[in-house]
Length: 202
Image 1 (cartoon, rainbow, N blue to C red):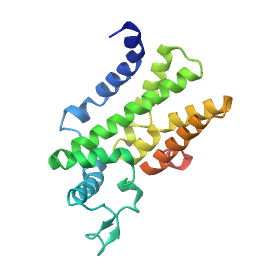
Image 2 (cartoon, rainbow, N blue to C red):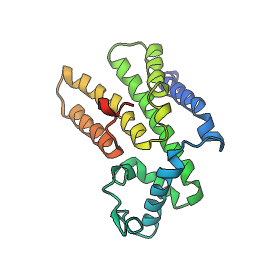
Image 3 (tube, rainbow, N blue to C red):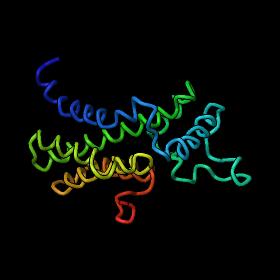
């Protein structure tokens, strides 16, 4: 691997290592389980995964209140694209679905750090402080207390990309960055909660 490629990948590798180190008890130990994860999100993911295994979309829950629309509950994240790999892989080993949900959370925390790093670089920070900005945002006051709320974590992870797109569009309106902004906002709305709103920051 060329030195230039190593230098380009180094910030992302460092952010990944910091995220893995910070969440080591979640990933590498069974002693810690965020309370909403096994009690609320896991049953929903299990139902969705089983529906897909049986060849049907998880649109309707026949077991609750004599039947309820499953997909209309935004917390089920049925229409969130990055939930589908977790659900499909859950069919291979259902007992490991909880661990895959944890991996999904950690991946989004990593994304938050990467997007913040890119935003910081765009507004003029050098590489070391930009890495620090990515670490502070992804490992700071928002994500750790909300790690049991997958929707909030995954929606907030896309917000630095939204801000990056706004900064780019401020200087020049292009279809590429407008489309990326639309995509990022769509990903936040499919995740859940719209955590960027002041009322949801608690």
